[in-house]
Length: 115
Image (cartoon, rainbow, N blue to C red; front, side):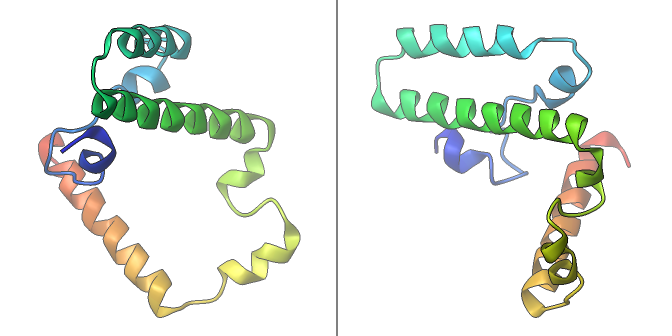
C-alpha cells in the first residue's frame, strides 16, 4: 500500500507524522519541500513518485489553508460566503455519518496519546 492509500487508515503507520513539527515551526515547509524534491529526483519507481506527488499536494493545500485562516480568521467558525451559512445549518443523514466518522477517527487518534 502506498502513501495515497495508507494515509486514510489511522491504524496504519502511513503518514509522515510531521504535522505537529510543521505546526509549531520545528521544521519549515521549505525544508520539507526541498526534501521531497530530493526524494523525487532519487526515486526509481512510478509508485514512489506518485506517493511523493500526493504528499506534496497535501502539503501545498495545508499551506494554502494556513494562509487563508491567517488572513480570514472567520473561516475557522463558518463559511466565507454568506449564502453558504444557511446550507451548513441543515442536518442530513450524510452530515451525521461524516460527523460520526470524524468522531471515530478522533478516538482512534487519541488512543496512542494516552487519552
